[in-house]
Image (cartoon, rainbow, N blue to C red; front, top):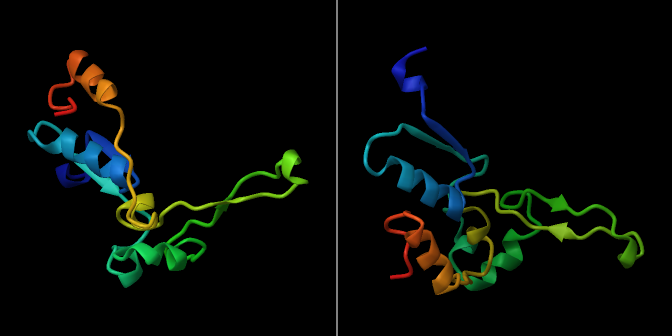
Length: 120
């Protein structure tokens, strides 16, 4: 096995969290990081306009098509559980909506020694 085939970390999933984690681990050059994604690039038009989620969710081109287990409270029905199968993961199929966490959470990470993870 050559050095090109060896990594300190292998991250499965190039969604928002996977991409941030890979970037943070590799930014100072100490670690070799492989980021793998089972889906395609996000070059489909529907990933880049808000109404596009209507075409992306429930489409095997962009959604892993997961379903929940049968739920007794729903008369045994299962529900669709959309998960993005694309670079960007679920953030590519969510109508371009995001929610930022609470400032106290980010500041708490910084207070625990995670430099660069504060709210500001």
